[in-house]
Amino acid sequence: MKRVEGLFAFLLSLLAALAPAQAAAAPIPVASPETVFLDVARQIGGSAVVAEIVKPSERPAQPPQILITEGDASDRWVSSARERLRASAVVAARKVAPDLAGDGPSWYDLSAMGALGGAIAAEIARAAPDQASGVTSRRDAFLIALAELKLKSKQIVDGYGGTSVLLTDARFEPFCRSLGLKVVTIPPQGEAAKSAIAAREGIVLIYNADDRKGLDALKAVAEDSGLPLVGLRLTLPSALSYQQWIGREINLVRGALNEAAP
Image (cartoon, rainbow, N blue to C red; front, side):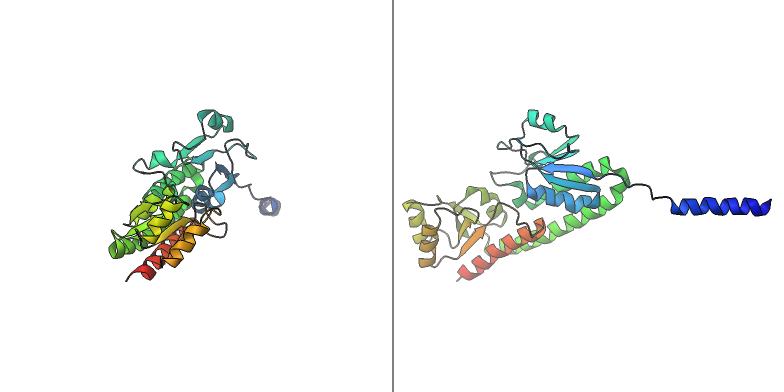
């Protein structure tokens, strides 16, 4: 009898070992019109999320549980669009970082992105409580990386605070001011812009590298006047993480200032 019971127990353990593992919970769908926000969500959420780019006029492959937006006056995610997507939670950068000022995108403000990362982490952990520990760990790593970028920014503030730079796109103003720079915003083309460059009203010309039109003449004047050029971008390059991208932008500005310094 004992031998039969032992054999039965052995068969049960064998069947348990051969049974397929319990299916993992489906990843949380996260959507945003901005690749930057999706990159942050992937970094913090890890395998717990699946991120999809989606514009207000589009319908994503699946209704997102979390929608991440800029939340400013130019944000086209009106309430009707949000209701159509049926997102369980909406994280808006301008709401979680109310001190964010200016027309520049939130991702050029490291403190705002820290607040946004914390809000994203909270929503992911709320939607997948079994993943909370990993989400918290990845959130902390993200915040540490931002702190390192703040130190790089402080080096520019300490070395070049109060220095004037020329800027062809006002959306970069908050970023430049965060580096302690004085901003002289000029139009991306025209005689007034050329005059400001020729008069060296700023020691560096910062322009929108995503703008392919109308800048060649200004860049030529800047080169003739001995002004270093810095091309910044408003969109995340596909090969870089958010931290790598912003770190590169900071390095570009610092390199140009070093070149221009007497």
